[in-house]
Length: 294
Image (cartoon, rainbow, N blue to C red; front, side):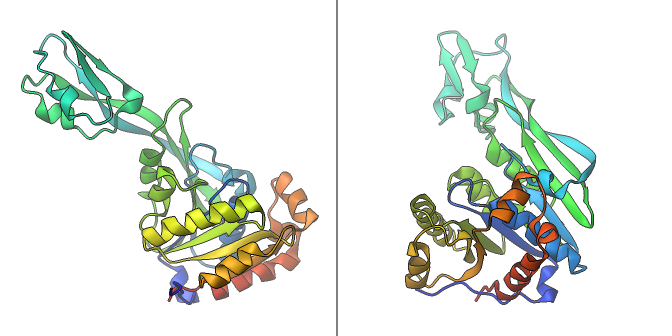
């Protein structure tokens, strides 16, 4: 089984999209993403950080951007004119998510189930269904030093996470190193966040849960045919199962960040590792040298 490797050169920092993902939450994904962005910006490169963990974005806690503008994100959902509706039931038949249901002479719509495909409007013979916008969240833009900052914030009670992630990714700048902070797990939001990226860093920890979820994430990325490598955070706290697995599967481990109490203290105070502990700059310098995609 061949590994995906690609040599990272300074020229490749421009126009390169890296997703920082994890099979589970709490592995240090945002720690890696924000410090990598901060370090790369310190090299004088154009860097963009996009927080696509839209249900609970927290990259701003560390990068501390100045937000200068925002935009609302809407999706189209159906609105039925009951005076025009002839009760044919075709909208009910075409909807695979039960977002629109015909009950006798009434048509009920369920906004949270709708996937905005527009099928119900296209099949309605009476032209009784129109689109109406549903506000699902916001995207905020700003600057964190020399880093272009973008993050999405899903509105409470909404479940259209992939839709908002897609809108955030629409703002990727082609001439920048774009670093995407991906939601944890392996569900639909993760698929949307990593889709189309050039490289994925999988952040894990040497614990039974971290190991189990790492394997699931690896399966997903291989199914999507995306190049990736592994970062082991809190290295030294557990056993060597993660390392054995990566070796057996021919997966590069491009960073081992030690289990250092000072890192946890910096994190808990919303401070950057490479600012608080300058000796760790070397780890991120090494990371930029060994990220490979072959």
